[in-house]
Amino acid sequence: MEDTPNPHAGTSKRSLTRRLAPVAALALIVAAFFALGLDQWVSFEALRDNHAELRAFVDGNMALAALAFVAFYAMLVAISVPGAAIMTVTGGFLFGIILGGALTVIGATIGATVIFLVAKTALGDALRKRASGMIARMAEGFQENAFNYLLVLRLVPLFPFFVVNVAPAFLGVRLPTFVAATLIGITPATFVFASVGAGLGSVLERGEEISLAGVMTPEIITALVGLALLALIPVGLRYFGIGKKKKAAS
Image (cartoon, rainbow, N blue to C red; front, side, top):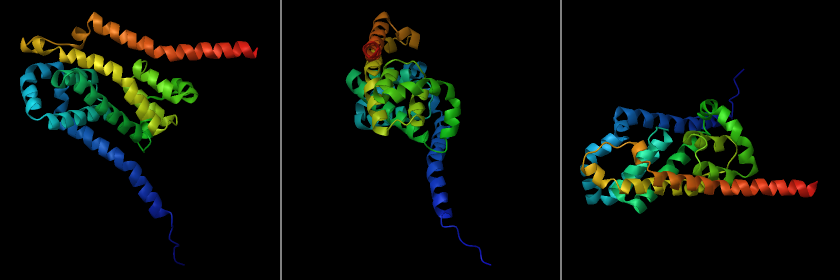
């Protein structure tokens, strides 16, 4: 008796391939990132030692430099390597506040979207385990209003950026909602840090040491606190609105 071919075998294999392909691609990117020593460029020391050459390259190849910066920033976020704040400051130094901030927002949004989509693939189970406790604490907020809650999480870093990238994927947030809230939410703080970078020219020319703690001046801290308070306004309005509704119902 001949075996009956399984009509679903080919479909299952193709489905598994589609789920594993993004994982394999991400693994190759991570391997290439460290094999090429790109992680060494994500530091203020690298900016201090190479600022003149980097600025000259940007001045002579603006379009190429902008594309390279966006691609590098997106890769950094997608593989969840620490250093986003350093790269944002670098972007402000190389491209100025407006263009540097805009390129950073684009790169960060692309990178966040990549890891959001990867979280829906075969790698999702591993990512879910890595952030399971925090995801459980976010569930109620996303169920109530996914866009507003994600917007607040982007404006106020209550959870690690990596967790905020993958949690929405596990909690049923739609891709357009994720992209829009991410794009809008990261913009204010991005331009604050880009403004720091735009003012680093004289410091770098003198060859002085730079650190993230050093660039966090009282003015920058005040601006970030102001953004955090601004982000919490919708939360307060929703809280008091709910309170009023409960009183009216009783």
